[in-house]
Amino acid sequence: MKQKRNITGIKSFKIMIQPFLPSKWLIALALTLVLLQTCLSLIIPLMAKGFIDGLSSYTSIDIQTVILLSGVFLTQLISSSCSIYVMNYIGQYVVLSLRRHTWDKILRLPISYFDQHSSGSVMSRITNDTLIIKDFISSQLIPFISGLVSILGSIALLLFIDWKMTCLMLLIVPTVILVMIPLGKSMYKISKGLQDETASFQGDLGRVLTNIRLVKSFLAENQERATGLKRMQKLFHFGLKEGKIMAIIQPVTMSLMLLVLVVLFGYGSFRVSEGTLSAGSLVAIIFYMFQIATPFSQLTSFFAEFQKALGACERINYIRSTEPEINTLQLAESVETRNTLTFRNVFFSYLEDEPILHSINFQAEIGKVTAFIGPSGAGKTTIFSLIERFYQPNEGTITYKGNPIHSIPLSEWRHKIAYVSQDAPIMSGSIRSNLTYGLDNCSEDVIARAVTDANLESFIYSLPKRFDTEVGEHGIRLSGGQKQRLAIARAMIRDPEILLLDEATAHLDSNSEKLVQEALYRLMDGRTTIIIAHRLSTVIHADQLVVIENGTVTGKGVHQKLIEDHPFYQKLYEQQMPNERASYTIS
Ligand SMILES: Nc1ncnc2c1ncn2[C@@H]1O[C@H](COP(=O)(O)OP(=O)(O)OP(=O)(O)O)[C@@H](O)[C@H]1O
Image 1 (tube, rainbow, N blue to C red):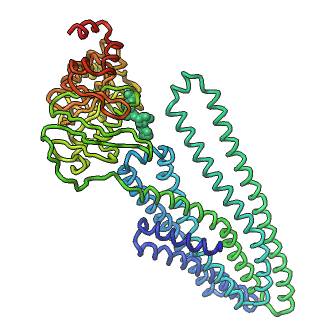
Image 2 (spheres, rainbow, N blue to C red):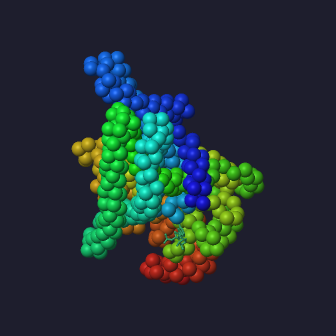
C-alpha cells in the first residue's frame, strides 16, 4: 500500500516537475557522468585486488597496473567533479524556471487569491519550496540513482569474488532495515513539523516587523516577546527530537558497520590463512562493503526528502493551477448611452452567501464628478474594486462609453484608471522610481510638469538628492501630505481617463490639505472622477452625489435634490455642517 503511494507520488512528482527540467540532453549527460563515476569506483576495488594479489606473487611492482589504476582514479575524479557541477546546474536551473513561472503566475493572480492567502505563505512558495525541490533533485535524486547502481554493482561483483562472504555481509541488511525504517518515518514526521513551525515563525516575524510602529506605540513588546519565545521553544523541541533520532541513527550505523567489518575481517583472515581467499579479494570485499553502506545510509533520508519535495511541488502547483485574472470576456455591446460609466443591476459578494452589493445602478458622466456618500461598510470601496476589475460582479454589467468593461483587455482598461487613496501607497526606492512606477519610459518634461501641478516642486528641490532621494519603506521618510502629492503626481504622469479618489485630504492639517486639494483639482480637470467622500464639504458641488447604504444605492442627484428628499443625506448634512442647516430648511 505504502509502496503504491510512493509510486503514485513519484509519478505525480515527475508530471509536476517535467515543465521545469532542463533539456533531456543535459539530464542524460548528468546521468552518464554519475554512472561513469559509479562504474569506475566499482572497478577500483577489482583493480586493487589484482594489484595486491600481484604483489604477493611478483617481487617487483607491476608498472602497467599502477598506470592503469592511476588513470582510472583520475578519470573517476574528473567525472565526479563534472557530475557534481552538472547536478548543481540542473538544480539551479529548476529553481530558476520554477521561480520564474511561479512569480509570473503570482503577479497575474486575482486579488481574491490574496484575500485568502497570507503574503508570508505566498512568499514561502517562491523562496523555500523551490529550494526544497532543488535540494531534492541535486542532493538526493541523482545520488539515489547512482547509489542504487553502486549497491547492485557491488553485490554482483561481491558474488563474483566470493559468494560466502557476500551472504555473510548481506545478513546485516534485514537488521538495518528493521532499525532504519521506523527511524526514517519518525524523522519524516519531525522534519514536516519543523517545516510547518518554521513557516509560522517566519510569518510571525513578518507580521511584527512590518508593524513595528504599532508594536511600540501599543507597548506590545512583551506580548510579542512571549509569542516569539513560544515559537522558538517549539522549534527548539523539534530540534531536540531530531537530535535524539540522529543520536540513535549515527552510532547504530557506525556500530553495525564496525560489526560487519570485524566479522568480515575475522572470517576473511581465516579464509586467507586457509588459502581459500586471496588477500586482494579480502581488500576488495571490504571496499565494496563501504560502497554498499554509504548509499544505503542515504536511503533513509531519501524518502523523507522525497515527501518534502512532493509537498513543495503540490503547493507550487496549487498556485499554478489557480485561474489568473480574466483578461477579456465576450460580452454583447450595450445599447446604453456612450458618455457614461454605468453600473446596471450589479450584485457582488466576496464570499458565497454573504452578499455585499445588491442591484447597484448608477451612471457617472464622462468628464464629470460623481461622489459616493454612505456609512462605513456600505460598499463604496467595493464598487471601486469592481471598477478596477479586482473582482467580477456576480450579476449585472458595468459599461464604459457603451462597452462592457470586461470586454476591454485588462491592461488597456487599467491604463485608463488611476486610483488615489487616503493611504497613498508608496514603494521603497527613490522619488523618481515612485513617480514613474509601472512606466517603461517617461520624459523629464512630463515629470517636471506633474511635480509642479502636484505642488511638490519646492519640496523636491529643497532635498539635496532631489528626485533621487530615497523615500524609505512605505514612504516612511515623507509626511502624509507629501505622500499624497507624490501619489497625485504619479497619477498625473499616467494621464488617466478615469480617476478614483478615496477622499485624500481627510486626515491632513489645513495647510497641507490646501496643497493637496489644489493638486487634486488640477488632476481632476477634464477627467471622469469618482470620489468616495468622507466629508460633505468637499463634494457638495459634485455633478452627482450617489448615496450608498447597505450595499445598494438609496439616492442619487445633486446636493439640492438630496437635501430635500433623502433622510440619510439630511442627517449627515446636519451632523457635518450644522451651521449651514438654516439655509436648506429655509429654501
Ligand atoms: N476582501 C474582502 N473580503 C471579504 N469581505 C470584505 C472584503 N473587503 C470588504 N469586505 C466587506 O465588504 C463590506 C463593504 O466594505 P467596503 O470596504 O466596500 O465599505 P466602505 O463603504 O468602503 O467602508 P468605509 O467607508 O469604512 O471604507 C464590509 O462589510 C466589509 O467587511
